[in-house]
Image (cartoon, rainbow, N blue to C red; front, side, top):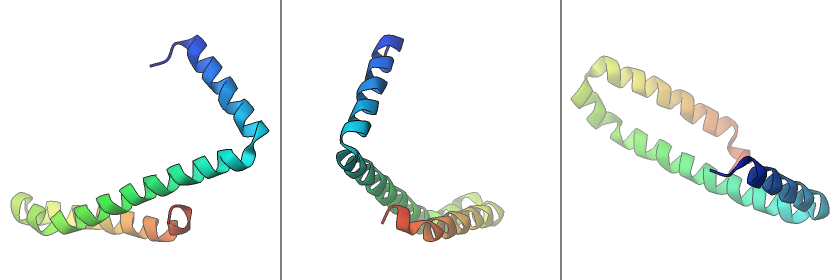
Amino acid sequence: MLSKEDQRRFDQITRHLRESDPAFFARLDQRARVRRGRWLLLLTILLWASLPAATVLIGRPAGAICAVLLLANSALMWRFRHRWL
């Protein structure tokens, strides 16, 4: 956690960087977005792979709820895939 003064200074440096070199700042932002998207994709694949075991362990109704949530997550990831892939 940063103190209020440190946070203010950090925000000031970030703002200055964004204004002085927008191309550099855009590249950094794009890299972070891609990395976040890859983690979300990996998590989605892992959850889909664990769904059968979860259904057996916690029961069919809970497995069905998890499947519906995963379908919604997958649909959102597909819809907004251009943002991170």
